[in-house]
Structure formats: structure tokens, C-alpha cells
Length: 437
Ligand code: LLP
Image 1 (cartoon, rainbow, N blue to C red):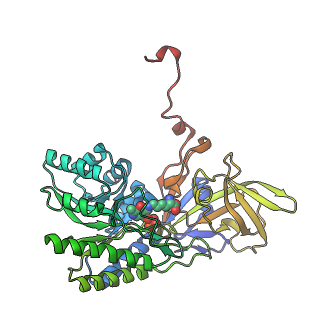
Image 2: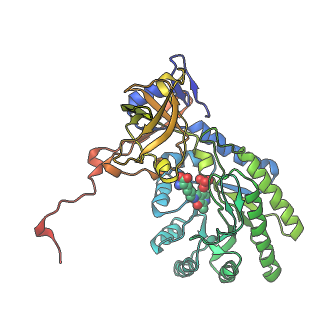
Image 3: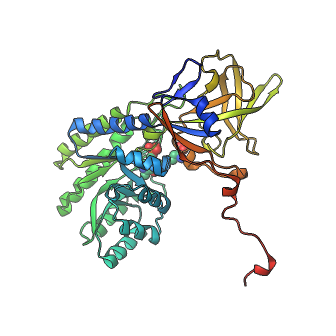
């Protein structure tokens, strides 16, 4: 992946740095990000839009991995930023993110969160439901401040990894239904509001999608809706936001397309649909998370205990697990791995990689083909950059790992490892005298 290679010592390198040295320096488990790869992925998306000569925004969906440092890199790469909570917005503001490039998502944004967005002066709020429209109208009128909005709709397309279906997804907690008039009603309620500026429609049809057809169908449906509104009212929405969801390769089974291919197809469909309906070509906004940051991240673990169930399998346990990567336990997600300190050795063993949490289901990889392993070996698990750290927990009161950025042969700590002291920071002592009525 990316700039990963194997050096003369037979060690895996990430961003030009020796992963075994990183493990020795910072300890394990450790998330290591190849920052050049993130930059390359961002530029590939942007370049495709540039070449097509079309207005665009590429927003990093930061739920995939949200920290001050990655926000700083995203800002350097001129990305827009998708945040979904006060916490992500706060982190972005603290990182000095250009606020006009921040988009705010969520199906239940609180009044406080919306107020924070207005006060920061962010670029756009992606409106999810009628309750939110009411809150936004009240807030904008009270504060006498304008706000760009997009309406999130459910286009009735459910994209899976290898195929898509055009029903079912209407039953979603997100967004306005497109078919039964909710989107029309939301349009009526917002398009001529004094402070809310309706920029267009948004949809997000799924995640880890390998297929371009679902994106094409979604862009057609949304654009046709915007064209119909223009017919009725003369109002033109300048933006079409098609969300994220572009798939990446976790294992050899996954066969994603290059990001540019998804984007090219999207642009083509939007141009054709615009032409057919006489609608001015809108700006296209996308929100990739996983496809920007997923394969840039690798987790390094130290192997500890090992166990053989005779005739059945060999277990190798690592010093992390579902607390730093919930995806295998939660979604049955599959990962590839390597012994980072024996990266050239012959793969003549098969191990089940177990985590250290007190749950039988805490297994990171079912059948990892590895060289003969022993306690102390460093295991690298690839493609953990998206939804790894961001979904990490303190289950079993396990401290969350540190995060390191590696780039051009250099490395930098960007999130400190949690300590046991951190784990009890919010805890208060119990005392019977202090109980309140
Ligand atoms: N935009 C919206 C509105 C989204 O809901 C999401 C992801 C994205 C963009 C970015 O999608 P991506 O490009 O990363 O696929 N925790 C799950 C993934 C949940 C995705 C939620 N929404 C996982 O670990 O696979």
C-alpha cells in the first residue's frame, strides 16, 4: 500500500520509516499513517474534477479519522471537511480549519450544535429533517445570519459492495424521502427563505461501494428533481452532493476502481442529465472518507501469547483488538497482515489473530498467512486508517493507542497514547454523604 516497502533488514517500512523502529519508539498498538498516500488520494480526486473543467468540492468525511493533525493536512490539501458532531466541529476549529470549507452533517443535530455552526460561520449545513429546518429558521432569524444548506434525500438506492438495489433504502433514518413528497415539502419550506440559502441536494448511498452504476443512478434522480423544481419555481440549485462510499482494497478479494473512475462516470452522468433536462451543470461535491484515509493507516501490534487447538487452529494474540479495531467483530470485516519484523520470510503458517479483550469474538483476522511467529514479533494490519481509531473504545479499560504520521522518511506523534490516569480522568469517587436528593 502506498509508500510501503521492505528494507534491507527485512522490516516493513511505512512512509519511508522502519515500522519496527516505530514500534520500539512509540510502543504498540500503534496506528501509523502514510501521509503522502492521503495527499495522493486527495489530489487524484481533485485532479479528475479539474481535468473535467467542472465546479467541485472534495470534502474529507472525517468520521473516518478525526484528529487535529489530519485536519491540518486536509486543509493543506485544500479539501473541504465533513463533520457530524460538535466534537468533530470543535476539533476542526481548534485545528484552524478554514471554517467556510466545513460541512455539517447528522440526523439529529442539537440546537447547541447548530448554534455552534452559525457562530463559527461554517460553509454549509446538510439538512436532514423537518425538525432541523424549524431549528435553522429560528436560529438564522434570531441571529440574523445567513447559512448555506443542502437537503439530504434518500434516493431509494441501496448500494452494496458488488451490486445495488433500487428499493429498500427508503427506510432509512437519514434524510427526506424523494418519492413521497418529503423532499418537495422541504424544498418549499426553504428555497425562498431570507437567511437560509438552498444550495442543492445531497445523498449518500452507502459505503465500501465498488460499483459506479449506483452513483450514476443517484445523480440522475437528484438532478431530475432539481430540474423539476426549476420548472415549477424558476429556482436553480447550484450544487449536487453525491456523498462518499468509494470502496478500497482490504484484502485481495476486494477489487475497487481507481477513485478517478467513479468521479469520471459521475461527471459524465451529471453532464448528460443536465443536457437532457436543460439544467445548468451544477457543482459536484463528494465526501470520501475511507477512500482518502483507509489504506493510509496501518496498525502495528506486538504478538504475545500463542495457543494451538490441536488439529484445529493456531491462535496468535496481539496487544490490542476490538478496542482499537471494532470492524471485524462488528461487520465481519476482513484485513490483510504481515509480520513487520520478518517481512521477507516465507508464509508457511496460518494463524487466527486474536485480540486481548475478554470476548471470544475479539478476533482481528480469521486465517492470516504468516511466517512462523513468536512472542515479540510485530504484526502489521493494513488498511486500518478509516473507522479504526475513530471507532476505538476503552472496552475492558484498555487505553487507546497512539497515532503517528510517517512521511518522507520522518515520523511524528500526533495523538498520545492514553494512560491509565487518562482512563480514570472523568471518574468521581462515591461517598454516601455526597448523595443529593
Ligand atoms: N458522507 C456521509 C453522509 C456518510 O454518512 C459517510 C459515511 C461518508 C460520507 C463517508 O463514507 P466513506 O467514503 O467513508 O465510505 N463505520 C463503517 C462506515 C460507516 C460509514 C458512515 N457514513 C465502517 O467502518 O465500515
